[in-house]
Image (cartoon, rainbow, N blue to C red; front, side, top):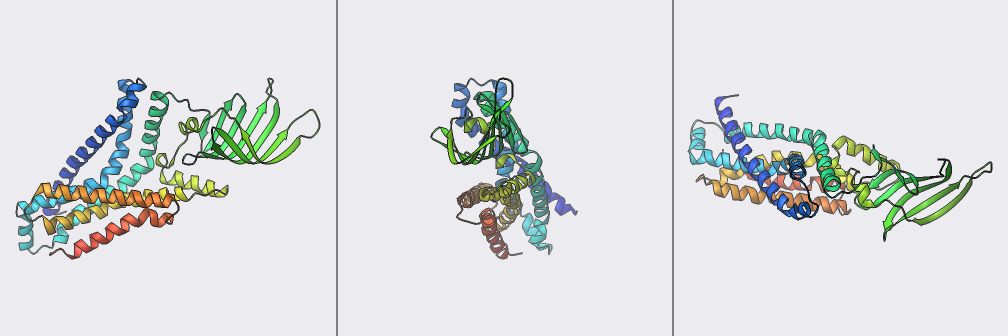
Length: 359
């Protein structure tokens, strides 16, 4: 790495840390004051509030990364322009694309690290933040045992096993109820393909009721649907169940394969799966946009202008990404297109800006 590369990389990293700290701090402050009423009404302790904030930091950093890289690239190249360093580089016959090389390399490395963090760190920290909010602060009691998308718990009406729970629709699949007597002898078993939460009760579909008596063979009854008043509510299940944000790429992939293997639609989860790949790569696109925008429009080295432009483009990416993901969840776009549309759009914009740069 040449002296010029080290100098550009040092300036970029310095601004990146400053901007990331500012963005994350601002987000956490706003989020804290939005939830302060919930904290006070549930009499949360200072330790619980701080723990909730700390465990949210990795996810906030992951979300703020593309915008932070964009603004850091804008501000660092604006600083070089203000000090006439870009002019000196061009006078030496060095291409401006060569000047941007260390920033692009850093963005590629950060994208890889962001994916690793989303795979191994944020699932745990998100789950801990969720547990602190729902269980420790709001005093919701998670029921039973949750392991590998298998839910076991004991209720007054019996022992339940649930193969899967969709936190978005409050639907269950693979429901089995074991009813036992006071001597823990099996009296009745109820198997249902799926269950829906409707008007405060669970509606089971494709039900097989097996009644065990003193006779030699159990009695079987088949029902298309049956309404039961289970003691467990969807909110209780959500307190312990993982959603897409609390799973890494590989774990979510296994969950999708299990859903599809049981005959259930996993379209919305496939959108999230592709999004876990698309979002980290946005950092590279943002670095290119920041470099190209700074060299075109910030000849005076106005850092304020670069900051405003960077925030505007960064929020535009968030809006487009969130919109296409929502459309994908609703089935309006294919999962792959929903997750990658924002990257495709802003990638084309980055290419257009680069072609306009006078090197």
